[in-house]
Length: 309
Image (cartoon, rainbow, N blue to C red):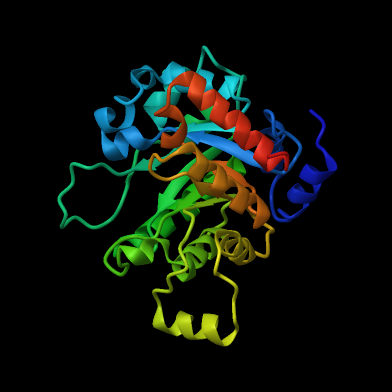
């Protein structure tokens, strides 16, 4: 597989990495309809763990079958498919080599009490990722949780093991927990901080949520105001998070969030594109739709990231 100049430039930013990690990043970046552009759309299907099967798949019952998600990602021409161990194992042989996969190594669930610390259980291993032929591992951290330091230490060790085996690391960096207000979870100062933490922990691809113009941290707010940091619109906020990701030296994608209208999904993608982000990792807004509608929407997103819509 040849790498375009755009992909070669991105890979050159990962100066400390092994050829194996760069090869797997190249696999993801060169796959699908956006292959070679430096932009990505990834399908993540880990919501069954966090929200339960009915909340995740009843809107489109075909989604109860893990094969559906593999095929959707392939037919839509996406860059990769991310899921927990059981989901990937359920189709690993049938779809071997047809799309890069990302093994999500930790998960939370909705059956925990409200008093439990915000944390995720480790549910897979780097050895599993190797066995399944995955291009990357995925791991969620919760900056702002009382359990955050444990999560940081877990992913540093897993990332080291994965890199030694030539596997890339994607970090879901989602602020939440005891130190974060509900509005603070998507505040721009907190979102940029979360992206930066993921970069510092060694993420090859950073996943965060799109942010609002709210500023949660008083000391940070002073700096944003004194330095006149532009955060008024979504594209400006995306750019700020790109800056926080080592001035764009690390790939950063943005989650699609809860299910919403197609026009809102398209507007988000345009803001990500215009702000210099690398793309979308879009789950419920794709697999909860009818297959035909999902394929049409994902095709339109490809056109947006290509600057054609």
